Length: 129
View 1 (tube, rainbow, N blue to C red):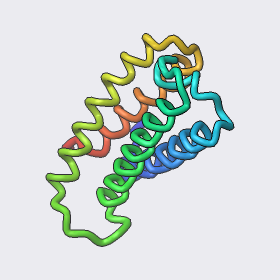
View 2: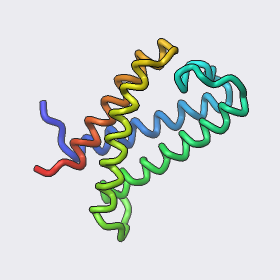
View 3: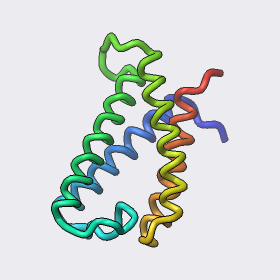
């Protein structure tokens, strides 16, 4: 089965909306922060700092994906959007390796496939045919 760039974009946008909601649930302490960040967070203040960074990065990436899909009118060159997405693709690939080494079983089982999927879907979006 071959996934189109358009489908990959829609899947990524949905995925990152879900990830932001997940991180908001951590901020509001509905989900324990001990299951993320490789189980290394020790205080609420650390959690707030890491979660703020994570939410900001995910919202930024979501915005880049919306721009890449031309869902809103913009003047940002395609090359700039593609460069940002290539960087994220590499970061997600590296994060996949990091998730495999996490102390939290949840992080290994849930986030390893998600970061790998994110990397592959971004590759589908930015590759040349």
